[in-house]
Length: 177
Image (cartoon, rainbow, N blue to C red; front, top):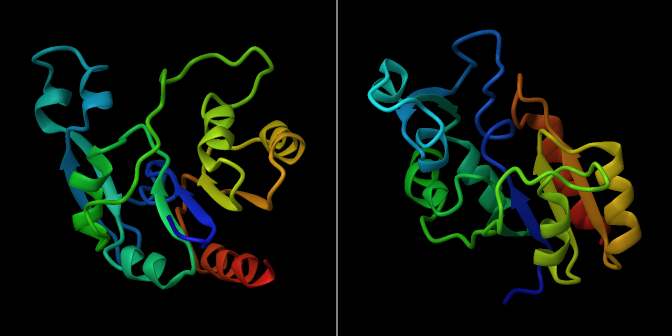
């Protein structure tokens, strides 16, 4: 285990700007993939399932993430498939730790994002940054109240994905610890 802070990384939104208006973001490549969670929600034999999910990824993101002073952890519904499908395209090692969600998309009784409580538990008292497109102010307040170490919840636009100002913020936050 490292003494570096954790960087908990979602795929869809931060790495895959799935709501981008333009089909081609500068520097991004498009792949068709069939992650298990997505495939399970498609109609058997459908054209959509045969074609696969369109995923836009930036091949330079992996190298950039690896320069940051964090221990990288997948915090995505792709779970272990992020190591198999996403990591090779963006240049990350294929053996990053993965948060395994006990129940995907479970409704939270307090209206939190369904990942939030498990993210706090997975951080186990360590400083962390969580990069996701679905974080709300309610989640930020919950983490501040229930996690004693430093934490930054970084909401990323699913139209734009991780951009230079988010990388700069990640660097600055790590230096501030």
